[in-house]
Length: 313
Image (cartoon, rainbow, N blue to C red; front, side, top):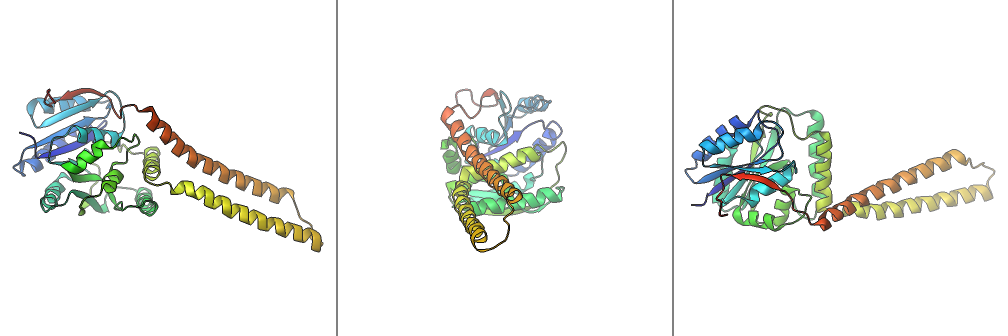
């Protein structure tokens, strides 16, 4: 019998939380009194994460493992879990327990009411720095303003999606994945369940500043070409200001005795323009780089091993 619910859990060096994560997910899913599966996707962990999941697979037939050949990234791990899930509804949740599994029954209730996507909306975020809170808030609102469809603010990947939405996601082939954006792009009936995001149960965050910046860049460049339009707008504006400045210089030269000091002002203008040009070239380079990634047509991920799955699948 196919599972009614699939829980996808991407993991990377999460040995400190695996046991507690499994324990709480198991307790929540047992309360549904429905068939379910818990799919751990090991994204190239270098600690004992895989060993711990292997043991869980041996003692619990509801636990399954997808083991990547190397680290392919959090969003790719989520994608692999969805691709291999069997549930009529798929829940995506991180292993760090910042998103409490106890919210899942509320999501299931909304799904039973007819919603195809139920996403967790963070009413409050505990244990996070002021810098992370303010930058995250700014990013979600900037992204929302840049896209032509609605991406809910203050949400993460913690959500429940219906099987038909999951099938749509599996048909999308882009390499730079931004799952929450793709789910919003797909449409269907969507609603939110508010919750308080907790502090990480144990271990260290897997999203340092460098990864957060890349994640933000992926979100913007995947769903908006407005940054490219910025190059044209800035070009016209700067050309206009330059022309006006040239008229001022000519007027001062012909009709006044004012001395036009050249070197300092010229260097300032040149450096400013060069800076703007390099920024625009960088933005264009990001888009070109993503085009290059797509044209290579490599698989999104490589699986080294699968456990708990039907071998005939």
